[in-house]
Image 1: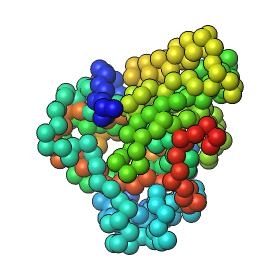
Image 2 (image 1 turned 120 degrees about the vertical axis):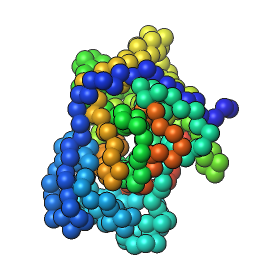
Image 3 (image 1 turned 180 degrees about the vertical axis):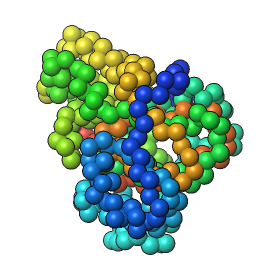
Length: 304
């Protein structure tokens, strides 16, 4: 099995449609005093960026911990304690940004460095949120952007008949996770209820997050017919088209150093544009799941 494919679609980035909500803060204390505002924006919009203060690792975890008390999440770990400290920050925050490979092939800023995907659908204990702090950024203008699209909004574009159809779909797909955890296949539902709002949410992984495209495996618990297979393919192709071409769905995060994004990863598809070189874009982040941590994967239909 081959490794990751680098999937690039042409993307038009001259017509910014929507920007994440911005909360300008002066300090950690200022952020905590405005926690209700921050939590409300996260609950309603699923995406916001804190600007104006460069959060330290411990401060970043402190915000996460306070919001976790509201939304019942924690850092993705089975550690006994995840109280914010220098030790937990070093252990559980990751550094990424898709620019760590000095030999990476750089495309233009109107192509994707990382294609559209939704985060870690294969975990039974799904990722609920992410905190991404851009600790270093010196890429050219319009390079290294992050695009977001709300899957609950995409779902609402469907006809009622198509919503009912997808509610009965289970897909089979695969991706590499790492040398210790191996591969799938994974079996996941096309639609799930959002854990906070309860709204139906599309949960179909797309090209940027898989090496084997999700295929219709079961329909209403039965093997699919040829007609159902054809309809599923049409809807899956439609989803990929909407993510790439429908700029009206798109939130655009134009990064500045120090920006800290809080994103609902259960519902937000996302992608990263190219145009940056080695180490021009470094994020310090964490994934957040419910406090009842479970690292099991959807490797069997029996787990659904």
